[in-house]
Length: 106
Image (cartoon, rainbow, N blue to C red; front, side, top):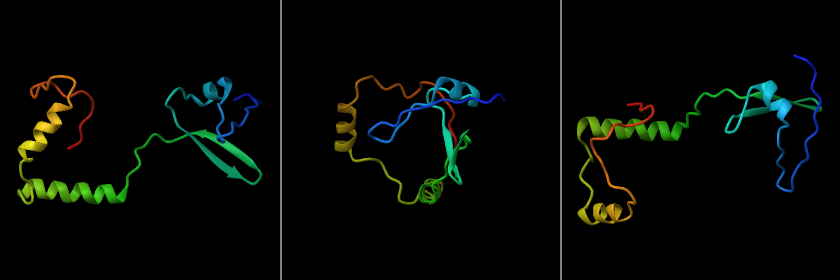
């Protein structure tokens, strides 16, 4: 890869905009992730691994919830007043038979 030298200004919030040439060289765009590694007095910027961060607390909670659902423990219907309050906040009708878009991990 050819050497690229670009300068970015740090905002009052400590933010920078990665110059276009750097974004293109790293292959990242809007919503992409980059990693910063401090090596001595230099900062190395690389495209970040897009793997999903696993939070152990969330993982443990989801495992407990899955067990409860599978065994029928501590699972019950929502109170009617809560269901009605939730429905009152909807801006679009609910179609329970609609296809789910995107990936769903069960």
